Amino acid sequence: MPRIFDIVLGSVGLIVTIGLVAFGFFWMIKRSYDPGKMIFKCGFTIPFVGGCIFLAYKMGPFGPFLIVFMAVVLSYMWTPHLSELVAGPLANLFDGGSEEPDKKPYYSIAMGKQKRGKYLEAIVDIRAQLAKFPNDYEGMMLLAHIQAENLKDLPGAEITCNHFCDRPDAPPKQVAAACTQLADWYLKIGVDVEAAGAVLQRVVDRYPDTEIALAAEQRLAHLGGVQKILLESHDRQPMVLPEGVHNIGLLDSTKFLRPKELEPGQLAAAHVKHLEEHPHDSEVREKLATLYARDFKRLDLATMEMAQLINEPRHSPKQVATWLNLLANFQIDLGADVATVRETLEQIVERFPGLPLAEITQRRLNLLNLEFKGKEKTPDVKLGVYEQNVGLKYGSPRR
Image: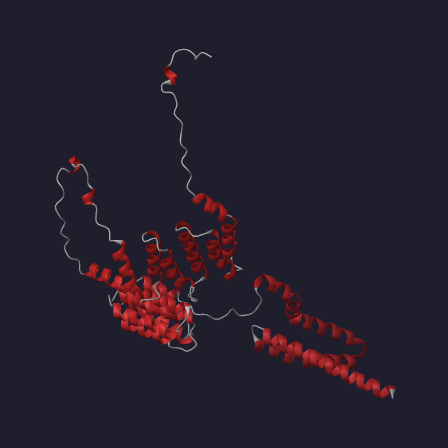
C-alpha cells in the first residue's frame, strides 16, 4: 500500500512539474519580442537536457563534466529570460513594462500639411487614420474644419459631421459640440441663418428636455440678432452723420444732445414679445425681471419671472444659485421682510447641500440681519444753533 501511494504521489509531482515548466515556457514565448526564436530555444532545450542526462549516466565518472557543460549552455541561453522574470516586475514600475500602448490615431502630419496649405494631402492623411479609427471625434472635426474653413466646402463639412452624429452610439456632448460648430460655420462662412437654425434644431429634437437641448434653444433664440449683425457686416450702407451743433461750448445745457433711451415700458414690451417666441431664453427673462424690479418696483412680477428661471430643471446649480441671490436682492431693495429673504436663500442650501454654493449662501444667511441693517436709512441729526464768529472774538468770556 505505501508503494502505491509513493507511485501516485510521484506521478502527481511529475505532472505538476511538467505543467509548471510548460506554463513557464508558454509565458516566456508570449512575452518575448521574438516568439520564433523563443520557440527554437524551447525546442532545443528539452532534447538537449534529456540527451545530456542520458549520456552523463552512460559516461560514469565523466558524467559530471557533461552536466557542467550542459549548465553552462543553459545559463547562456536562459539567464536573460530568468532575470527578466525575477526583476521584470520591479523594472516595470519605472519603464512601464513591455505592454503595448493603446492604439490611437495621429494627426500631426496632417496638421503640418494643413498649416503649409496642402489641404487635399492633409485630408488624405486624415481619412487614412479615420479608416483605422472610424469613430474618432478629433479626426472628424479636423476633417470638417479643413473642409469648411480652408476649402469653403460647407456641404462637405456637414456630410462629415453627419457621418459622426448619425451614429446611435455617438456621445451626446460630442454630437452637440459638432452641431454647434457646424452652425457657427454656417453663420460665419455661409451667412446662412436658416441652415444654422436647422442644425441647432436637430440637437433640440434629438435630446429633448436636457441641458444640451436647453443650450441649443438659447442659441436659437439669439439667431435673429446674429442675422442682423451678419447682414450689416456683409452689406454695409453709407452712414449719414447729422451736422454738429455750432458753438457747443457756449450753450447753457447740452442735455438735448444726449441720445434718447428706450422707455422701460417699450423695453419690457419688447422682452415679453421675444419670450413669447423663445420662452427658454434665460438672458432676456432675467433682463425682464430686473426691469420689473428696478424701474417698475413690481416685486410680484419680478418674482414670477425669476421663478420660471429657478424652477427650470435643466439649468445648472450655479445659474440657479445666481438667480436666487438676485431675487433676494430684489426683495431687500423693495421692502420684503427678513423671513422672506431668508426663505429665498435657504433654497440654495436645501437644493445643493454638498456644493460650495451652499457654504457661500450660509455665510450670507449668517450676516443677513447686518445686511438689512445696512439698508436702513440713518436718521437726520438736527444740529443746534451756535454763536456765530466765536473764533473771531478777542479775549475769553467772563464767568
